[in-house]
Length: 176
Image (cartoon, rainbow, N blue to C red; front, side):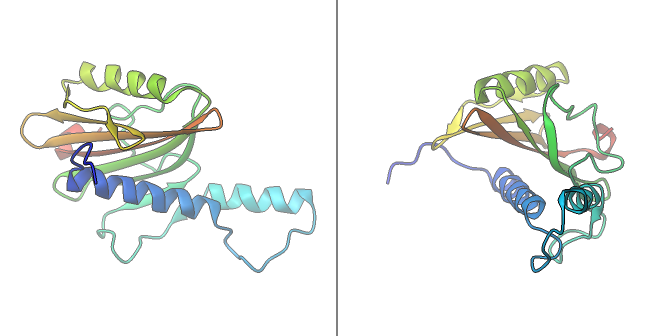
């Protein structure tokens, strides 16, 4: 087995959390329910997309998450939403040390454009890119600021749609 890169535990945790949130977005609230018409089906999707998900048993007590929108208090200055993208899910915990934030989104842009956008945004905030661009076939980039603030972005491109997961572990005062 050829090892392409070394996935950091924090980066791996963010990718897993993003995948779980993305799967939650695709799972109906009541799997046994059948849609009785277009209006009720779209109303159900709208309701589900705008509700706040309860914390999972493994999440820290201060974590909030939502599907289809940015969770209240999400640090948009730290992790801005790429113009033209759709938020799939987000989470934020400012009570943990370090504070953690995650964002999952979709956009009809190439993976390289997504990485370039977030590289520019993060470098403007003093983050430095860590060498390495991929983990296997997934575009992935890690950033470091100081000794303990990290951000990871991973992008999968399929059928002209890039799905990106961004996770940040930063000092509480940076999560604004």
